[in-house]
Image (cartoon, rainbow, N blue to C red):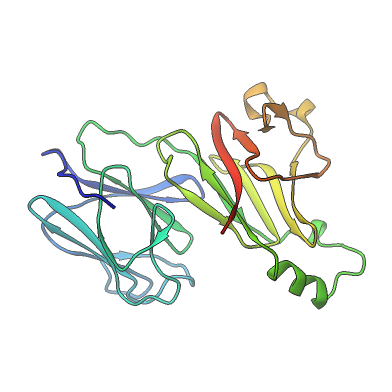
Length: 233
């Protein structure tokens, strides 16, 4: 990733979980440790995060993030990193949490959509579902979503779980299912019960509650935010 000097404005990390802003942190000359255990500067209660997961360090012209040998890794703009200089707008993924790095004092963060892996018992009643089917799913190509607009256009979200809810500001709007024949998507509730802005779209067409196949390069619109479905190579 090419490095550019940030502006002289304030540097911040915006912590979000499932699209909602949790907290803002000012990035100063002092190092910032991130992890699950007590004693970190940013402590995150998330079992997918290591005890001491990552470190933010600053020098006069640059801010760096370093993975501290974590179990699940640290991603910047969807790429696993060891140590990298951060640029304005970079998206840091640590466990289920995301940080947006801002280095311009006039920059603003807007809440965006979220993708949440979940287990929905009402959706899990599937005939002849067994361990063989689970093995088939794990052997299939992994799908993902990449954002096309909004303040986090570089964000990449993997769809590893069987069920992934998509929504905006804590509202579940659509469900992506990973099955033995690929991925499908369906609206959570009927379009009749929603405002126009709350109706999810796929390739510009309102999404129904009946599951339909997700094809590579399909574009999903959630409250004006667009993501593209693709297979991670």
